[in-house]
Image (cartoon, rainbow, N blue to C red; front, side, top):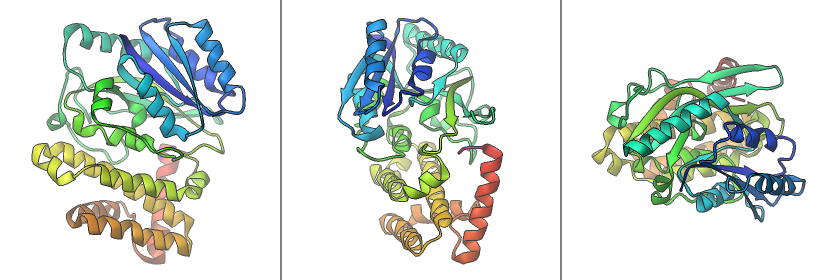
Length: 341
């Protein structure tokens, strides 16, 4: 069995996938597995993937499939993974070599010592390639360092430093036992990769290294503001699917701090979706705003009140035209500070 499997979903990625794959190969370690999933590409992605498999046998595996979107790519990667641990790396992103060495060293330590670990947390960096600027999201002071910990040990919650898919490496069996299955032809499913398996995570470790480099800058990128507004229905769909994936009240009975974090993550999703609806500023988006919150209210009135309170506390989900103006103004300030798209 390999130490770790990296899944790299690719769709027409010929212009940037090599930088991603080369960064994963940089240590020359044969204890890793790189699964390149060609998601029905029409450019030279498939050819590049096959070339890597030929050049690095036993390390790189090229898998070709009909187009199904990012979710199908992750599903396929998890299906083929032979590593003890599993991480998704988007084809336009990359990892830092020194941080990768630290990650591999840490994972080997857990395997050799038989210390249980379900999820490794590392920092990630927003890389604005057009202007050369970058912004690091560090979890120092949020999670304990240099020891295995559980949800009850979490130090605090930061509204802008929540863990995302790019900051976690899962034990493969945790993902599989969670029954993770992402929808096809749907964007923003990376939120489900992080959120859905959380009840299966018992033991975590925070390694304070800047591992994942998150590319920001392509006009067609899924996190581009205009693109996100154009895909509002998919953002809403993912938010609703996350809401439906777990009974938070049952989780709260077993692990209150885990439930608190999951409610917090859902609150972030509702806040983002609400902000995008405000930015769209159409009668249709007003209707979707009402439907989004009414659905939550009907499902769980207590959860609705907590999430609504969170959103209003950050001046989001405010009613009326003045509320929209405040939401949009705050969004622009946060975007300028944290440079997340």
